[in-house]
Image (cartoon, rainbow, N blue to C red; front, side, top):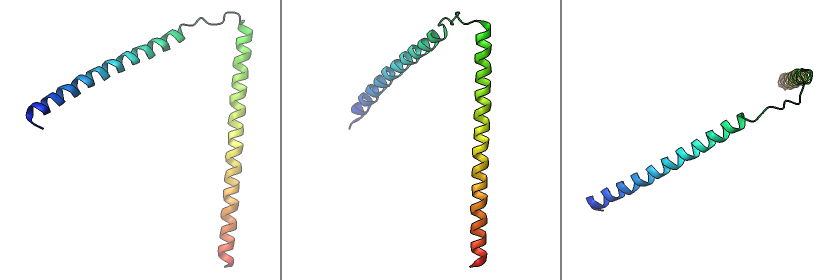
Length: 95
């Protein structure tokens, strides 16, 4: 390919890249606009303050329950690993 061909190829690629960047910016602006529009959705004013407080309390209780359950699972796994290690150690000593 001669010099003119290289220059034309470079110009074509530059043009394609400009178009791709332009489309990417447009998509980014559309996505940003959609995200901002979803934030502007009106809150449900039908809920009373007591209901909101009860919902928050339920959320906190659920999070605590999940944390406790995760802790129990971790402890069971640690005990299981410790037992396996102990069994392997005893087998190693007997052999």
